[in-house]
Structure formats: C-alpha cells, structure tokens
Amino acid sequence: MTILERLKKVMEEQNVGGDVEITMDTTFEELEIDSLDLVDLTMNCEDEFGIELDPDSAPKTIGELVEKIAELTGEEA
Amino acid sequence: MSFTVLGTGSKLPDTVVTNDDLATFLDTSDEWITTRTGIHRRHVLKQEKLIDLATVAAKNALKNSGVTADELDLILCSTIQGDYVSPAFACVVQKELGATCPAFDVNAGCSGFIYALDVADGYFARGRAKKVLIIAAEAMTRFTNWQDRSTCVLFGDGCGAVVLGEGDDLLSIKITAEGNFEALNIPHTQGNCPYTELDGKESVLHMDGQSVFKFAVSSICRDIKDVTQAAGLTLDDLDYMVLHQANYRIMESAARRLKISMDRVPSIIHETGNMSSACIPIVLDQLNRSGKLVNSRYIALAGFGSGFTTGACVLRCHKF
Image (cartoon, rainbow over all chains, first blue to last red):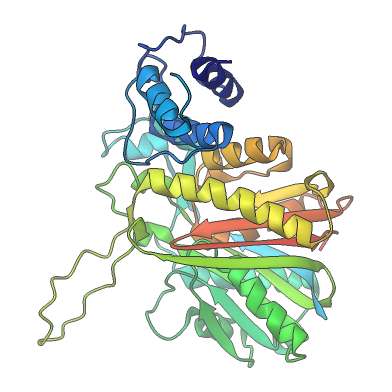
C-alpha cells in the first residue's frame, strides 16, 4: 500500500475529508480541514507511520504531507 | 487505606452567555464556535463572587455525603485563583462553612482536582484524616482576554466539590508535570512596587491551542492506559471516562484513539465551556445525581492543563 493510500485510510478513520477526491494536489482547505483537524491528522500519521512530524511545518497539500512522511520513513512518496 | 467518595456537589453561576451573545462584540459566530469546540454557552460570574458558588457546591457535597463541616479534617481547594491572592481560597470556604480544620489551596491548572485527590490520598494513607472536603473553584472569565476571539469563547466559571472518607475506592492515581509555561499561561497581576523595572503583562490567558491539543490528546491516552493497567483493569472495564472539558474535539480524538465510545465519555462542555479544574468534579456530580453511577463499577478521570500538568485516576464506582 502506498503512503497516499495509507494516508487516505487514516483520514477515513478520522472522518475528515468528506466526499472530496483526494490526490497529491488536494489542499487541506479544499478538504475543509481546520487547524485542529490537521493537528489530529498529524498525530494519527505519527502513529500510522511511526514517525515524529515537526509541529511547526503545517503542510498545505496532501502531497506536501506525503512527501514529508516519505522523507521520514525512507519510503517512496 | 485510601478513600471513598462520600458525596458530590456543584454550582454554576446564574448568568448564561451564549455564542450569539459573544458574536455581538466579537468577530465570531455560533457556527464557528460550536464546530471547533462543541461549546454552545457558558456560565459567567456577574454579581456573584466565586465564594458564593464554592459555598453552595461545598454544602451540596456535605449534604450529599451526610458529613457535617465540623467533622472535616482537611479542606483542599483546587483553584488557579480564588477571590483573593491571599489568603488561600480554602480558608475563605472554611470560614463560610464554619469548619475548623486545616485548609489550603492546590494550583495545578486544569489538572488541579486530580492533584488534590492525590494530596488527600496521602492524608488518608498517613492516618491524618478521616474526612476531607475538596472544592475545585474556578473563575476563568476573570483571566480571559475578551479581545481574543480564539480563547475567550472557550471558558466559563463554576465549582465542583467532593467529600472523601476512609475507604479503598481509589484503585490507582498518577500525576505528572513537565515544566512548560510558554504554551499556556496567565501572567501575574502587577503590584505597585516603585522599584520594579520589569514590564508587566496584562493578567490574561495566553494559549497556543494547537500545542495544547496535541499535548492533551497524547496525555489523556497515555495516562488513562497507565492508571487502568495499574488498577488491574482493561479499558473495557471502565463504565465512564470523565475527561477535563477543554474542547469536545480533544475528548473525541482521545476517545477514538482509546477505542472508547463517546457514550462512555460524559460531556457538559456544550453548556459550560472550559471551567479549568472544576470540570471533572462537576461532571462527577452530574453523573452521581442522575443515578448513572448506581450500576457502574469503575470510572476513570483524566485532566490536563497549564504547567503542563496531567492527572488521572481510577475509582471504584457506586452512588456516592
């Protein structure tokens, strides 16, 4: 399973994103994910991928988050 | 020897402020506040003093427990700030109750009630007390920055109280602190010392909401697991998990991670906002008086707050 697929599963479990199609270019604004949702999602990603994300680097798009996860896990984005 | 909860009490201010009321002078809306916090309204001290609430909450708890004020061996008050900087608010409550026992305050931010339970546990363990009154009394709206729409909508005022007696209903307890004052603080009030060369800050609350959210969710999950395991139980054994009512989304996130359904996580935040350390004993009082503890076995409490402090415990449950 790719990082994006795993991220989609995490978001589904968190119940964020609604029916919007999620691609690398999708912005968190389009997904109506606010700052607290994003903190929650960050924590869920930390659990899912076994990493620690910088709390000050707020990604704007799904792609930015996927790339950050890839960088920390060494997996392909 | 530890303690058992003999009775509970609480009191909220009479004045209710809705989100729509706040929207008359803040750039906010009921929809914005409700979506992000779960809060619809809060109770605010207007003409009452904090001692008026605390006295009613304490008397309710004493009446519920069948204990009289002259039987008390200790009064502990959890508060960020009572009606005075000094004396301790516990002494002010003591006077109103006509009690004669030692009385002092515990300030551990929103975790203060759990800290007070831990202090009380020590008194029971040492055989120094047979009856203890704990009051959590908070007037957060005095310290709220009413020009900061991101924080002032969160808080309300209130008091909760419990009376403890000797027993073995405290199955486990844990408190922590990690020395962080940047993310959540209220600067001290300025005196009028002619020698001070420090620039004073307004004594209003400053909070980094995202840092607090992450800290809160992480600490709830860690502490609830720890105290449940220490009590020899599993999360499935808990009838209720009573959390500090800071933000409904914090409670939802923690419950989801712990796989505990929200019907086991009592919430009053929609009616009260965040009342700091008073939240947990007020929820406890509502559970008690609604009869929900009658057929329950175990209840876990978890608080978190400025400091950063945390506290959690597991109590054997019954109607207090």
